[in-house]
Length: 327
Image 1 (cartoon, rainbow, N blue to C red):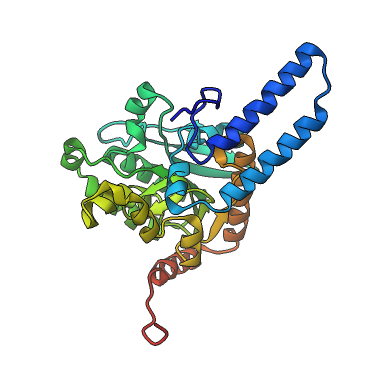
Image 2 (cartoon, rainbow, N blue to C red; image 1 turned 180 degrees about the vertical axis):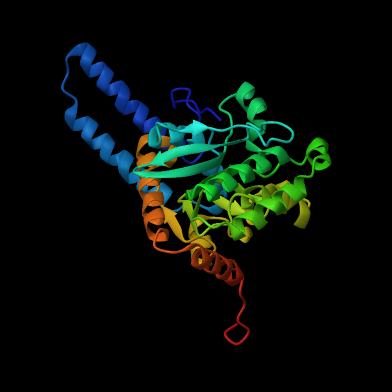
């Protein structure tokens, strides 16, 4: 939503007071330039107040508020990060069977000094783009394109980096007719046995099997305000309570935040976001993503193919382990 006093920018309810204060600072600076006034002291006071407000608000976010941040329309998407990290990115298209799916983008890139295969889900910025990208919900041909690129990566001994950001795989009739469930299952099977390092990063929404189809990896990273869950809070509320008013309770129960999933051992590392979230400073978030993934690739480069597969298998076998004796 856009909130009065936020310069027409999209603002979530809890971030609106911060944006309003930032707008006042901007107006004060503009007024000072026009009238040749000195407002440095007042600007410093308001800036310090905005910083305090930001720290206080973002230190107490609820799971539902983090869901809203993960879906923020200003949040950087896969192509935004690649344009900053990998200037030589060469996109590869098509599944060689049916079509090219714009909801998944992938291709060759240089991650600092490492050649990699990058595959990510892509949403749109406006109605036209979202229709083209199918709101980031891949069809079967999207997952089959991803599989083709992963096999190419294995052939040329290139690490695979996946960027996860989808509400889920597209559930439409056409997708089901073309084998959506099988395409996801084939992705899981392929990634489990792939003989090259795989690093997955949940950069926004990680929804259901549509996200997991790009998430069977050696190292799973997750942005601080991203979410990763078997179902959306809305879907959970509809099934368990048949009441959309229960979405906040559902978000809490699902344990879908980065902090929860790191504590449960589902993700290996939480990547910090700039103050206010990734949408407030896309360049800084890209630098943090670049650094974190590179460090993981350096770590994984010390293992041979057999060791990678063995560690990957044990990693997923351990997720959800229940110890009766200590329960």
